[in-house]
Length: 421
Image (cartoon, rainbow, N blue to C red):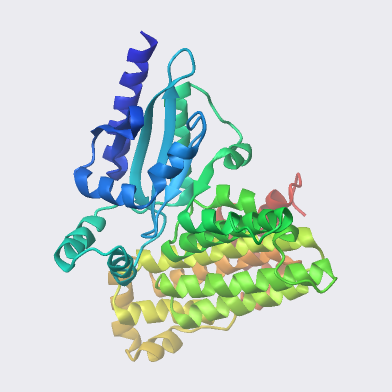
């Protein structure tokens, strides 16, 4: 009876995941023979899976996979797998979901990888068309699917993501070769594994920036200790931490530009954060600043994506406003920047964005003010002056209209204080 219930749960899970992401479910029985698949391209994906050595790796796990396993190949495709067992602990079936990509893969790289696998031209072109149907999702989402599969099979809940993260096994061919290098000592192999893990987390975070994906917070649990991932060794941990964060800021800037943010806006944000990093006086401040920097770059990409329907002139005007947010911006300045008269520009801006230019400028200023309140020691009056508000009272009034609380209350909420100052 328990086996029947488990099969029903798996079928329901397969349907839900396919409906959500077009991710296929696969079942392999004794000797890893395919029993069933919900994938439309069963034959092609199975062939690629067998060529990746992923099934060989799963065969090599003594006693089967009692925890979720993610296997990858040279194409960048990833599969989620776990065995389920009968009452005496014998593996009954290997259940897999896949394939999926953890980031957008360029057609050029895919073609190069298929060519290296000796696929003839016509089959290669067909596979490239098929691979366009493979869903792209964040590592965090893939991990959630792995957790769902594990619960479906075992009815076990993992409530602590950071603990569970340690239990997900990642496999890729090049990693196995690296860690199996007979010339490496045990310490070097351990260090190699640590660095590979940190590089993997970093790449997933950069993918989140590039795609404007807010689903990055769980990944930060792997990267929240800046001191464990230092990229320099000057003997000064704070200096090493600053160097590491500055390098990451530059990488986030590049990812944001690839995500569609204008070079001017991205580089300005990069410069602002490098300045804030240099002003940091302790490591915990660097950790908080690193998180805020990620949020800001991701939000900038999302804003760009949301405005992708806007005309070039209006996008340029929005970029101009944000790039000059600490200056006294006038309507004539913005209109002149895009080459329109004030009358035509205001009508066009409202038609495309649904808001008035002055309202947009206010919202941009308040957004910048929120960042200043969170990441600097500047006072409310200083921020008001920086953003060219006529008075502190007017700044507080506009801030409350947009955010819902006063600047002091907003700052105190984030600092964990009880009341306004």
